Every structure is written in C-alpha cells, then in structure tokens.
Amino acid sequence: MKRALVTGAGAADGIGFACARALCRAGCRVAICATTDRIHERAAALRAEGLDVSAHVADLTEVDQVARLRAAVGAVDILVNNAGMGSVGAPALQAGFLEMAIEEWDHAMDASLRTTVLTTRAFLPDMVRAGWGRVVMMASVTGPMVSNPGEAAYSAAKAAMVGLTHALALEQAAHGVTVNAVAPGWIATGASTAEELVAARATPPGRAGTPEEVAAVAAFLASEAASYVNGAVIVVDGGNILQERKA
Image 1: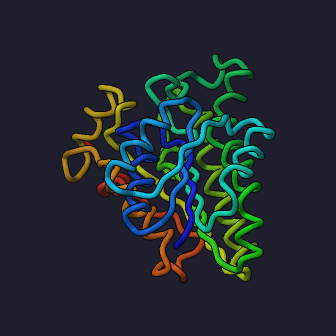
Image 2: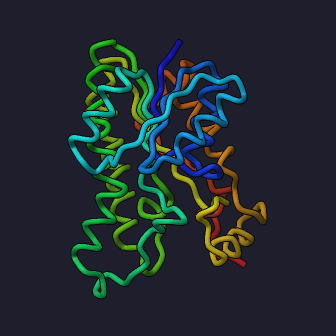
C-alpha cells in the first residue's frame, strides 16, 4: 500500500481534502495536515467512508514543526504540496506591489513557497532512498501563466513552485521520483470570493471547476500510470487561458 501526505487539507470543500479523498479511494494510506484542529474533523469524515487516514496539525513554515510532522508520519511515497492556498480564515493577500509591506510579502511567500520547500526537503529523501516517489505541487495558473492586479506575491510564489518543479524533476528522475505540478484556474471552494465565481462564468464551460476535478489530476500524477510524466504543469481551468477575449 502506498503512503501519501497531503498538506493544506483542513477545509471540507477545499482542493487538499479532495486530493486526500481521491488518494484514499485509490488505495493509499493517507496522512493529512493543516494548521488547526479542524483537520481531525476531515479525518473523521474520511474514516466514516472506511478510508485509511491519519490527521496532523503543523505550521509548515516552521522547521521544527515540519520535523515533528515527518517523525509522526514517517516515510511517504507520495507528497501533495497543497498548503498555502487561500482560505476563508487566511485569504491570499490582495495588495498592490508598491503598497505592500515587506512583511506582507514575506508572509505570502512563506505560505505558498516556504511550506513547499520545507515539506519537500523533509519527505523527498525517503523517496530517493526507496527508488520510487511522487511529488505533486499544487501551483496555479496565476503566476506561471497569468496574473491579476494585487496578486504580485501570490503570483511570484506560484511561479517559483513551477520553477522548483522543473528543477526537482531533473534532479530526481534517476532516483525513480517524478515531480509535477497542477495549475488550477477558477475553482469553487469555500474560499472563493464572489468576484472569482463571477469570473468563472466567462470560462469556456461557463462555470468554475470543482476540487474533485483538480484532485483527479493530482491522483493521476501520483499513480503508477504516470511514471513517464515528469516536470509537467497540467492546467485545470476549463480552457480559460486559451481565450484571448473573455466575455
């Protein structure tokens, strides 16, 4: 049985929780992590479905807490770096670059990028030693491909995640480890703003995506079937970035 860790899985209607459920249903033993005790509610919901899951609370911007998480979870075969997406309690920062305090910039970069770096550094060595592993980065179309005013920090962090994906894919392929990224567009979660849901109506399908649609891609990248997919960035946005003109 493959062992997986999904970070940022505290929201019942979020991408992380959907990824955790998809991996559980694929037969994995899954550890889920969030910054608050609500992660135990998510684990209880999955166990009620007969799925194999454990819950952990950690601030993944802190080196010592990441180390404690590694000690508690043990080695994993699959890592889904989802922590850092906006939430209802801590939405992604919306501020102009020149109006943003440097502390706000640092916080935004830490939330999406530092969490990914520290967690990957903690769990990747076990995959290398085992000769098999899957790292899935939850990036975004925002940053690597498009952006919005007021999202400089978020865009920079997500673009950096894609750069990290490319570098690690090259470094680790010989060790049997693949590293790929998922780039969601407008996805309807509890953290979605009214403005975002309106923007989603202008996508080719005329709707926002669902966390489950994103999770299906992450689960594929984590599978044996994706063994020759490495360094890829798979966009899940209904074709929205293809449109030069949006209604």
